[in-house]
Picture 1: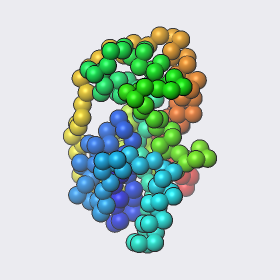
Picture 2: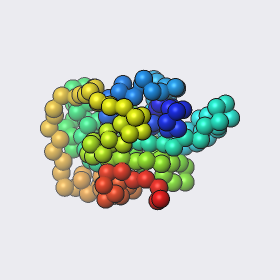
Picture 3: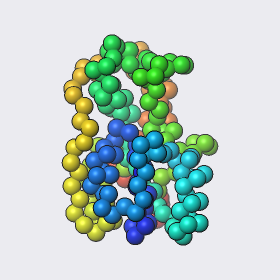
Length: 196
């Protein structure tokens, strides 16, 4: 997570959405950077702890931004990242993620839970689709009034990510809210923002 006072903006770092590349590119403009365990701070914690601190300490009430990836592709990215240490194919990985008590290697959380508060309300002012990189980059360049280049970071090796129809159906049911949110962002041209 990065906080930009001049741009009045907070960047949420959603895992496996290019967040590290964005942070590396945007760090020169950031006033506050959260790393390690606090890098992927969820909206709920931000609203309870960080937003009040920014308001009281610095008089900031910033807009927020984040990136969401197509949910199944998000899981595929997680699998490629961990595949070399796992003795399970992608179908088994998804089943483990969906299980009532996932093993440690399948506890990846969801984008939806990171981007929403306890009531399920979206806590992001500007939500971008990972698949709309030009839209995201152009918006950020305008926001910082400079040219930004994203250089790939943490690229995982390729891996087979075939999935059975039964597992896909179970995934689609469990991730329905996240799938719907990503579809809304895509339908908005890759940038979901508050009505004018």
